[in-house]
Length: 102
Image (cartoon, rainbow, N blue to C red; front, side, top):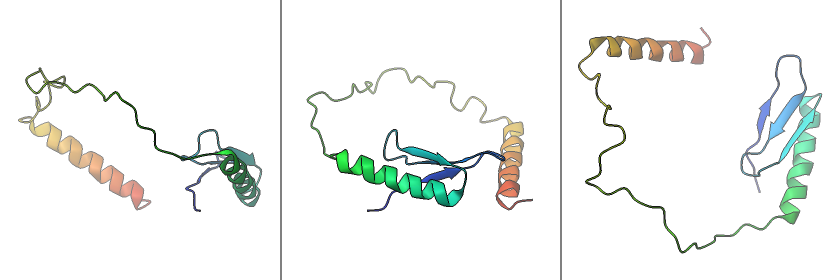
């Protein structure tokens, strides 16, 4: 089975690996290779003790009535403000620049 592992390394610090699908499944080590070995062992340990199942619950979330006032009534309040288009264009350009490493 394959698991998604998130690797991080804060500047000049130890490597950290976490598995989003398995709560409390993480590991730390000084090197990338070591942390991958540790997280693999941790996944095996957790998986051996785990059971995955679907549980039926007799209660459903409460739905908001269609005629209720929307909690985001301010949404669209700036739809006629031209400065918002400029702002979002700038944000998009910054995002693209960061993605390209500019």
